[in-house]
Image (cartoon, rainbow, N blue to C red):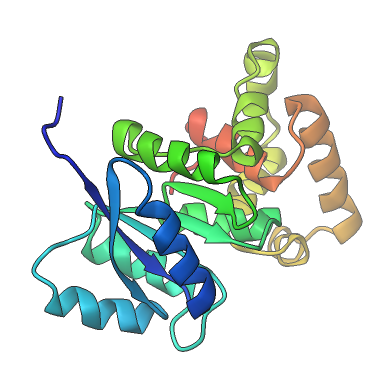
Length: 217
């Protein structure tokens, strides 16, 4: 068990009032304290280069000027992989969540969460190395459904191609062009796979593909 009294947190968010309120909240948690705030990814880069101490966790907004959350998450993953990044955003669509997970974030939370959930997320991030919110956990559970595991690994070649392309950032229309199929046919693949695998969205499909080694990030 670590003897460390406090884990350190940095908040990256361009809304000063929110960031200030969040800092005060986190500083009330028994084993966390905020080192500083940054207004965007570029500001974070400058502050990290000047500070002697690296944070344990970065709470990262997505929609920011100059350098947004996607660019920042990618930079952190490439340059400071030891820092655990937790996305904290108002965006709850699956494409955004999928893209941030692919950029290397270890969890994804919405800004309207209860303080106790945030505290739990920070602790699990340090203990397990990741935190899956209810939204992400639901897709994980669906993709790991043991009743579907064996029968659903028998995919046709076109289905495998579709799954692999769906794990990219391509739109479904772009996938249709690549596969030389109509958007209606691609939509049919999508609906059939969602039903067969008992998943609800594209994030769940990616999680299934990763778990069963159908693709790699």
